[in-house]
Image 1 (cartoon, rainbow, N blue to C red):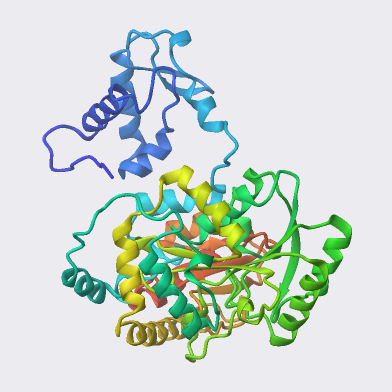
Image 2 (image 1 turned 90 degrees about the vertical axis):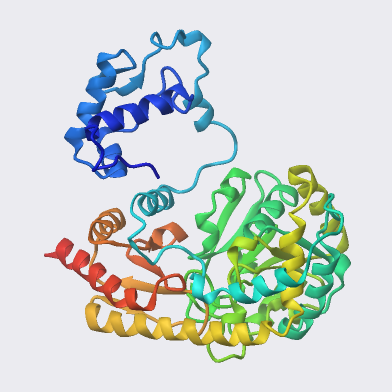
Length: 478
């Protein structure tokens, strides 16, 4: 991200004025469009607000921008030889459409991380670089020339990868399937997007866990779906709640993350799994099982997926490479009846004509390689180590101020705050202190919860980050 050079002979405000003029001339800010506020630009450029005020004054003197009290600062419509009727109202386009933007808290987190990469990051849901099998993947890529034809691949995804997944799912998840029942996606979110767009219709009622990662995805609201809650306790959802929602709202589909659930880290108990399968079979109700975290089980014995117990073909199973290896490869998968795979493959082909072939080949080779088991073992050990560091820090810094149940797998740590502190205030104060996290309300929970994701955080930063978080809490309650 651009910032003015403090050792440059040109004054900071002049550098900022030149930079903004360039962005305006490139069309990033068309005539009549609203510029970011002085405060926001000051944060972005790491300068005093007075410096931005001087830059705006310079641009106003040149007729490039116009400021009105209460209306902000806009790009001039006359300086650039344009009139309002010839200038598209890009703000209206940006606010329109059926696909809703991310939640405000998530946009704020993304903005804060972009402005200050030194923040201790307990928000990003991905593995740190040292937890990814970087060297192993580099070795696999060096051994293969990838000289075959690079045209459009099968709409379902690489045959090599789907065949590797058949073996992987059988050996590691006790799921028996064939390559014809597997669809390769760019990750769990694309799988969910295809399901909500292609298998459901506006107005349909669906059930999701509460709290749930699904609440943080506006794609459900964008699809016009009605969401109904399945409360999660320490043993997962109560299966009878599904029957209740079906009778009352005629729900058409259930979305579950039963193993190390995001964000709570809970595992659906075996008794509830059996009851759930009985109920959905009785009602003929499909379940989407999102299972990205099972193989991170710290004890090395992952809980089996619901799909492994499914004898009626009621479950659409989705998984991802992101949480066990490398999010940058953008590889996910779905196991579904053949008719569903064909329907979603057709839709995905309309979107992008298929995924990049090389990441699929690399993922398939990694799943079949001798590198997989050692990598998973190392991953579990390191994640447990980070979790234990987090628990130690929470007990040291926040004893009496939080409640939690330590997860036995996954990347997330769910905490309930005992003091009553508004989410927005706590997030902003924490950012000032140099730490960032995700407020629990993002996931549909009642206010007063936080999710710490520790997989990306450096071990040496965990204690420092929690100490900063504790200072933010104490400053707000004192």
